[in-house]
Image (cartoon, rainbow, N blue to C red; front, side):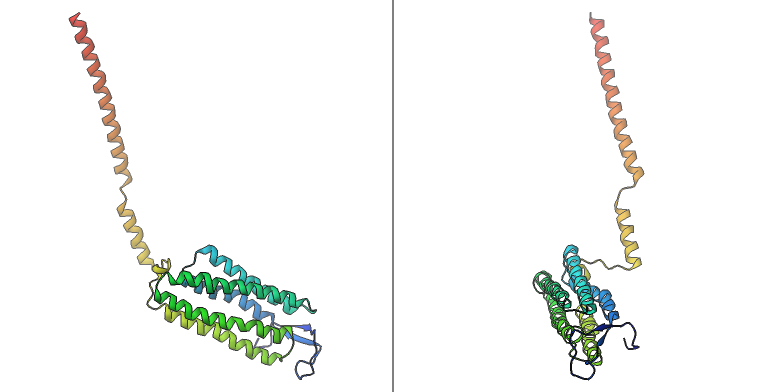
Length: 243
């Protein structure tokens, strides 16, 4: 976007009497939505893993995020007032994301301990506050054509800076003394993984020993059966002699 690439002209629904937004077209930077399509699911994944949510809940939240980004892009590329229908759909998806973060994930993080809950709350509140400003920016920029593309770039740039680098620093700092195993995560190095597999292998009985033991049991049962047959034959012979 800084190189003035990744945009397409879209006819304005409203032509304002303000310099910079009084033209027939407006620059729509679709490359911004490509960036959000890649990065916002990763941000949500980091936050939801912090809360220890199960994978079905995580995938559902990421699906809502993708719906939000795609509907925002389609709405921005729509020339007529139908763009506000896509805008409403994106806002509905955002409400679903906020519910998962503020209600479901926060309750789950609270069960994992005060430090996990504190980290999730700080990063979650930051995410909710910053993300809530994106629909406002969309309405003033792609939707309503109120502010100029230069002001739009500054507005979105500030939001992206808070939502990505600042969020990431806060999350890493909060995770500094949290054991990933408490969150249901097993993060092992190559050597640790090899040691774990070696211990697991040493703890199980060798296959040859199991087969030998099985063979011995079979031999014991067979010898017992042979002994029983010999005993019966001996008793039969003794009975014949008596007769």
